[in-house]
Amino acid sequence: MKGTIKWFGIIALVAIIGFSMAACDSGSPASSSGGGHSATWIAIPAGDGTGGSTFPIGASVDRIHGIAYGSGTFIAVGEAGRMARSTDNGVTWTAIPAGTGTNASTFPAADNIRGIAYGNGTFIAVGDNGRMAHSTDNGVTWAAILVSGWHVGIAFGNNTFITTTTGGNGHSSTDEGATWTSTSIWGAGTRGITFGDGTFITVGHSGAMRRSSNNGANWANIPGGTGTNASTFPTSAPADQIYGIAYGSGTFIAVGRAGRMARSTDSGVTWTAIPAGIGTDASTFPVIGAFDSIRGIAYGNGTFIAVGDRGRMASSADNGVTWIAIPGGTGTNASTFPSNALGGIHSIAYGNGTFIAVGDMGRMARKHFTP
Image (cartoon, rainbow, N blue to C red; front, side):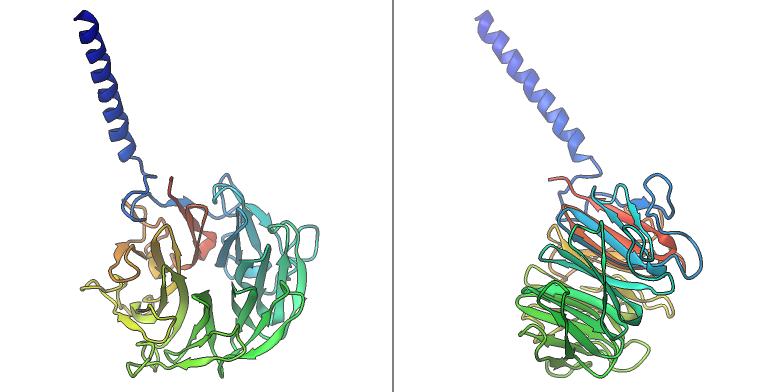
C-alpha cells in the first residue's frame, strides 16, 4: 500500500511540473502558435555596432530596397551599391561594400541596388544603369553583369530569372545570369515581380499587371480598374501604383498605393479587391495622402505579411481574406520601425522560420518562429 501511495505521489508531481513548464512556454514571445500572428519583432538598427544592419544612416545612402533568402542566407541590398548578408537569421550581419574590391558588390557607390532574388544556388542582384551582379557562394563573392535597362525587380521560378525595368522591358536568364534575353512586358513602369503556380506576374503603374505562363516569352495583360479580369486597382494617379506582389498557398497578393491590395486564387486570371481601412476584410492600411503606400509583401509560416509607410505592417493567416494590423513604433507587437515619415518599410522576405523586413534609415526588423 505504501508503495502504491509513493508511486501515485511521483506521478502527480511529474504532472504538475509538466503543466508548469507548458504554461511558461506558452507565454514565450517566440511561440509560433496562432498561425504566424505570435512572436515579436526585434529591431536591427543601422550601423556597424553589435547586431547592426551595417547600412549607414545618411541622406541618399541609407535606404535598404530589397532582401532575399536562399541556402541559409539572407542578403539585403540598398543604396550606394551596398549589400549585407546574414547566416544566422538576421542576428548578425556582414557588410558587402560597393565597388570592385575583395568581396565587394561590384556596384559603384553612385548606383543603387533595387532588388535581389535566389534560385538554383545563385543570388542575382539588380539595380541602376543596367547593372547586375550574381553570386554562387551565398554572397561572399560577386561577379558583375551588365544588361541594358534600369532594373527595379527580379524573381526566380521554373529555372528562370526574370527582371523588370522602369522602361517596361525585362530580361530573362535560364543559366543563372550568364546570358540574358530581352522580354517585352509592357510600355513603361514595371515594378515588382514574383513567381507561383507556374506563372510570373509583374505589377506597375495605371493599376495594371502582366502575367506569363511560359517563362516570359509572352505576357497577358491584366488591366487596371474593376472590369472583367481586371486588377481592381485604380487606373489613374495617385492611387494607381502597384508596388509589390507575393505568392503562397495557392494565392497571389498584390499591394500598392492608397492602402489597397488585391488577391487571386487562379494564377492571376481574376482578382478580388482588398480595400484600405479597418472595415470587413480590409487591409488595415489607411488612406492618408503622402504616406499611404504598401511597399512589399512576403509569405511564410502560413502567413502573408505586408509592409509599408510609417512603419506599418499587416498579417493574414487566411490567404489574404482578413488582416491584422501591426503598427509602427516600439509598443507591444509593433514593427519597431518609426511611425513617422522616416519609418518606411520597403521589402520583406521569409526563410528558415524568420521574416526580415528592411527599409529607411538603414533599419531592419526580424521575427522568428520556433518549431
